[in-house]
Image (cartoon, rainbow, N blue to C red):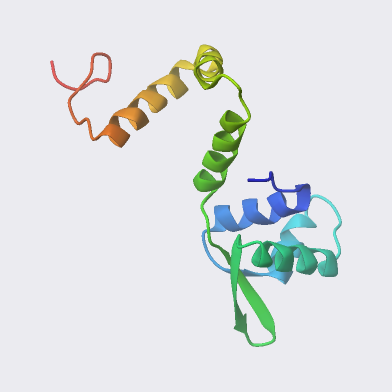
Length: 130
């Protein structure tokens, strides 16, 4: 999975945050609060994201309503999967990764691994039991 470009990411970030369909005008107006961007530029990039399968769109009057097809978490997981796939030594890459993540991320990773395995038993330090 290729990383989103700067404007692609700005558009996706807004739609992920809003959790609702939006028009190009809404997106442009929001981006323009921080920096200037042309309506036609956002319209072109939204169309590209649609063709890439990141956005679906539906006609609403004369405008298109755009909404996300994939979640931010799916995007992040794809980037992580691709980064791991680039490694010649996956166990070493995973070890280096867990050596540098925060305790909170380590706990979240542990919980995700347990959930993926279907392991519902409490583990030491997770606050369950006792």
